[in-house]
Image (tube, rainbow, N blue to C red; front, side, top):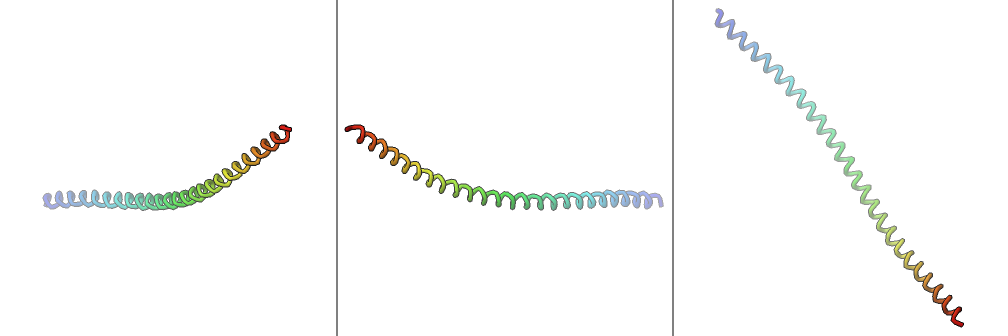
Length: 91
């Protein structure tokens, strides 16, 4: 009888350990699910930021082209004024 009682006690201890392991597993699974959700949010934010950066890069390059054209035109105008001034002061 005592052998049976000892054996049942050992089974009870093992079942307690098993139930504790299952509850820990559930907590770990919940943490993983939360981290997966957070990573999904971070990924979507990163994609949005990449799109915004691409837009800004395109706007910046088009502005750079426009400013380069304006600068060239400005140098042409300045050169023309210097040429006209030299022409009029030559006389």
